[in-house]
Each structure stands twice: as C-alpha cells, then as structure tokens.
Length: 295
Image (spheres, rainbow, N blue to C red):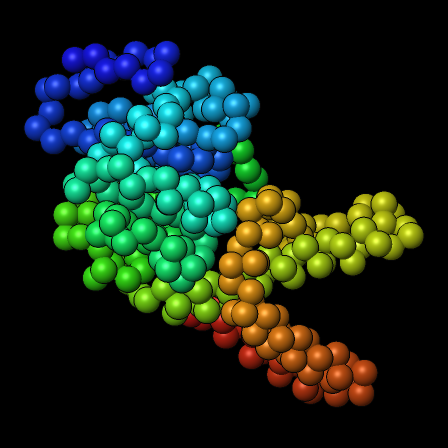
C-alpha cells in the first residue's frame, strides 16, 4: 500500500498485525533521537516529520530520521503524534491539533508540565499524554540526534489518569519498547522537582560560563579548563531558545530552587571567609551523600 505525504511517497508495511503511523513535530535532538529509536520497532509503520525550520526538515530527510515531511493536516492523520518542540511552541500548536481521531495519541516531551496540561483543548484532553523523558544532551538540531538516547532513562508520565485508556496503553507500550523506566506524578509536582534537578543546574551552568567569559583574561583562564569546569559548564551549550521557554514556564519553581541554592552557597562562602574549615569539610561531606542515592 502506498501513502502520499506532500511530495513524498511511502510504502506502508502490511504484513504486521499491529502497526502505527507516527508523526514527530520538532526534529531536533529529542525528536530526531526518538525517530532513530522508533525505526527499530516492528510496530512502527511510517514516521513523518514536521518542523517550522526548512533547514531542519531537510536535514531530517537527508539523515534518514523520518520517511517524509508532512503538513499539519497530514500529521493529524497519524496514530501517534509526538510534540518535541519548546514549551511555548508546544502550547501554541496544541490549539491546531483538534481535527484528530478519537483513537489518536498525542504525546508531548516538554520539560515543564503544569502550563502545558492546563492549555490542552478540552476536545482532545483524552488524546493527550503529558510525558517528560529525563534525557538529553547539550546539543541541538537534527544533526544532534543520538540513537539510544532514551534507553534506560526515566520518563515521567503526568496526570495519566486524565488521559484516555487507549492513549495510556499506547504511550506505555511505546516507552516500554524504548526501554524507558516509567514513573508517575501530578504535573505541579513534576515541575517543582524538575526545577531542582534540571532547570536550576542549567541556570547555574549559564552563570558559571558567563562568570569566566566576563573576565579580562578569559582566554588564559580557559587554557586551564579541565574536567571539572568542562562538566559544570557543559549545559551552557544548550539552546537559549528552548531554555528561555522552560525558565519562563516554570518561573516560580525555578526561583525557589535558585534561592535555596544561593542560601547553600552563602553558607559555604561564610565558612570560608571565617576560616571555619570544619564547617567547610562538613558541607562537602554532606554533599557526598547525594551519590549514595544516585549511584
């Protein structure tokens, strides 16, 4: 069976009992990496892409991330639609995805959840799955796509009880096939946790990078950059467009996380100023305990 998306022609698989036609809106790191992983799944029939950037769309085709580039009208004919775009754009495009089947599953991959969930048109609430895969790199764009990016990572499914039963089962099947570890929570709970574990570290990384870049001898300083500085500043390579959206959407939780971090840093600074090395040592020892949990 042949299916036409715009100027592209796709041969549909017809020898499998259960097949899905998947659309991915946003063909950067998250969307492109997802496409690479989905290509290996037997239940995936075709993957079409949509991206506001013609350059990204062209790259996605050239890299073989998707079978075709479709229009929004064509995207809405898919069985599953992934939204892998910045949060503000995601909220806007949701308003255009209302002409879908009752069985269509829309899965967003946004880094914040409460405002996204609150913006879903009522007519498609059952179609919607709020998901946040806790994975990524500091790179962006289709060329940053990494096969296996999702494997063995956690995916947070928010307010799943408000989604349709069929959509919930489809999402769980997909994430299981990607070898992801599922966890469930409410959207507001997710956003507060994400502020501490993801959003604040990005804010700190940008600040660390700028602190060095504003020094007169920044080039000399950076010749000394070794593993520690590179690790701490790595997140500062992340897309400003995407992270501006995330900071805006999760402003209150992010500010709380930054304030608590500032209090901790102030305590350490005060101990150093007063030569309270026992306190400094204890602060470091307390921080070591984090990896007793993570490791």
